[in-house]
Image (cartoon, rainbow, N blue to C red; front, side):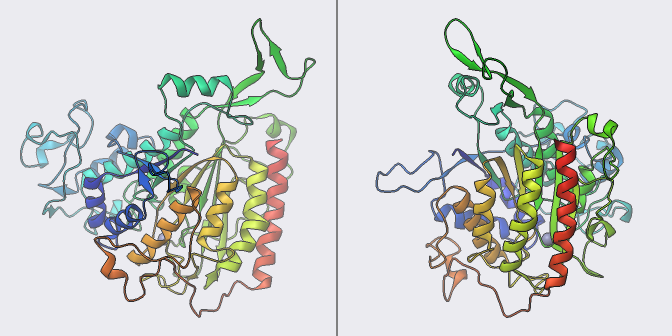
Length: 488
Ligand SMILES: [Zn+2]
C-alpha cells in the first residue's frame, strides 16, 4: 500500500480563510501530523513502530486552461478576477494567456511584478462586487485559492494515474514502470483541501468556487489506463515468447466510481460527470453495443424541503432513469451509523460490484457527524461502531481500487479534524482506536476537557425508518440489475 498526502502550507493558509469554518485546514493537518500519519517513508523508520504513513505530496497549482475543461470562460474570468488588488499570482512558467491575467487592465500593479511559482499567503483584499449571476457576491476567495484547490485534486489524481493491471498488480508492465522511476504509483491519495462538490459550470455555490472533483475524475478518465487479462484462449490466456510467459492483456479506459458521503447532495459533481448516453429499461441491443460508461456517481445525503442544495435530482433516482450511472440516495434527518452500515451493505456494495470500478473517488464530508455546527440534526454519524466513519472507510479500502480521498463539508472544525484523521489512519491500514487521545500539538488545548479522538453519536432519532430504507433498497436493486446488463 503506497499512500500520498497532499499538503502545502500556503494553500492550507488560504483554505483556512476561504473554506469555512475558519482555521479548519490548519487543525486537520496538525492533528493528522501529530498522530504520525504523514512521513517521507512508507512506514516509520523506527523498528518499534509498525504504523504505516503517507508520503507528503506538494501540489501544483492549476492553470486557467485546466479549469476550462469544465467551467465556462465567462465564469472563470469573473471568479479569477473577483478579488481585486490582491494576490492574482501566476506561475512563472505559465504562458501569457493563462492564469488570471487575461484582463489585467482592471488589476492594479503589473502582472510581471507578481510572478511567483508558489501560493502566496492571504493578504488583505478589497473585494470587487460581482454579479450574483456567478454566485460570487459573498466575498469570493483569491485566484490563488481557486487555482490551488483545483491543482491539489489534479495533482492527487495524477499520482494515482499509472498503468495498472486489473487482476494482477505484479505484472512486468507495472514493475518496469516502478523501477524506471518515471512514475510513482500510489494506491491511495488524500486531499483534505479538495472536495468542492457544489461548484457548477457557471456558478459558485455552497462555499465551492471550483469543481476540483469533476476535474480530477476527468483526469483519471483521460489519463488512467488499465490493463485487463484477456479471457482464457486456446493456450490458457498466456502468450509464450522465447524467454518467459507473459499474461495476455489489453488496455482499456478506466472505470471511476465517485461516492459522496457529505450530508449535502453532490450536485456539482453529478452535473460535471453526467453520462452522455441514455438507456431504456431494458437497454436495447444497440445501446448495449455502445461504449461502456466510464464514470458512476453515487451520492448519499440528507434531502428535505429547504435543505441545501435545492436540486430535484437530489431525490431518489427513479428506477426508470435514462442515466442509471448518476445515482442519488436521499436520507431523512438523523442519519446514523446503523443506517450507513445497512446502505453500504445492501446498496453501495452491490452498485460497486455491478460497475466494477478501477478507481474510487471518495468525498468524505464530515458534516453528517453529530455536533456539526451548520446542519446538526440532519446527521448523527459517529466515527466508531458498525457503519461509523472508520467502518465505512475500511469497507471502501477493502475494494482494493486506487482511491482518491477528498474532504468536503464539516463545520465543526475539531470534529472534522478527528474524522479525517480517523479516515487517514484506516486507509493506511492502521485502524482506529476510539479510546485514543489527541496527542499534544499546537491546537491540543482546544480538544479539552476530554481530549478524545472519537466523535460519538448524540440522542437524535434516526428518521430513516424501515419503509424509507425498503424504498431505497428496491430502487437500488433495479439500478444494479440495469447496470449489470449494460456493463456485461
Ligand atoms: Zn456538506
